[in-house]
Image 1 (cartoon, rainbow, N blue to C red):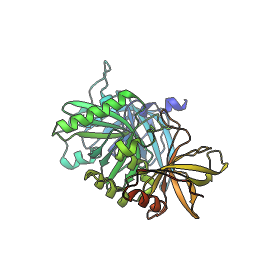
Image 2 (image 1 turned 180 degrees about the vertical axis):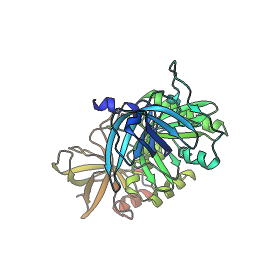
Image 3 (image 1 turned 30 degrees about the vertical axis):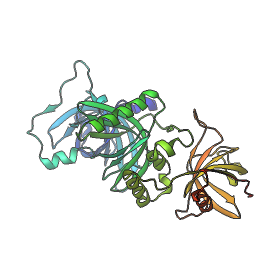
Length: 389
């Protein structure tokens, strides 16, 4: 069985990270399998399940949620040893009858399976107790900030940075599905997500959602699932300066890896109050850039600084390729400091030779003299210089 077939059960609808105690028993009595486990991820077509024993791949099993007295039939599509002491295994189970077997109240829209002949989930128990419902409920998400480029969602169990996600937002009987990438992850606080907005349709969906949020006082119902088939996920690039002027939230998300949780949340709070913590100033002078490109070749060249903030800068004239997260060193006026690459150019509308960088040191003074020059009475916002480096 190929990889695509083995992953069939968990690739066809939005996955939710959800732990549900279940009982797995083989339909073949001769196998003698009857074990308790706990799901790690669920969707309309199956689940990932942790067991403390290996089971044969391909067998059919009875899958039961004892707390809700619901059961169905599934097939073991994949078995992966996880090691540990005692040793555990990850099972990929594919439901015979896709649907909302898990009882999620606000399931993603792609969980609505309409297949003729699919029987209803078998259940005979009274409604589950409050503590049982809580154990089976998905993570609680609260939308606190949103812009055209991203959003911040509060939760006590955040996904790690770098996770591709699909966000379902429901307001007034309508639903918006938004693709994104987790840029910031803060324990017991939440996640910052940059929207994947390559299409005009996606951008319009975000704008429509923001309009509905402003119009309705209803608290939106939100679910966040891991996005399948997005291993080579690349977030959209904005034109240089676009995020500075029009989308400060997106700018903050893109430099999240260079900020502590306290710094990020403080900047987020400042934005809510209408303050920009690091306004940018247009300049034009040269600095030396040193680093290593994506091919492992050394970079040692002169680049032009187009704008600066307290910690960030937009550079142009780069000959070589860098990745977001790479570290480079900038030198000017006998000073040398490390900077982290926040974004790189090359997408539509973005100059390929441009790169955005953020200082590694949170208390840097690398650009302070230029920021002071721009604050002098009578100076224009754009300063030209032939500063020697």
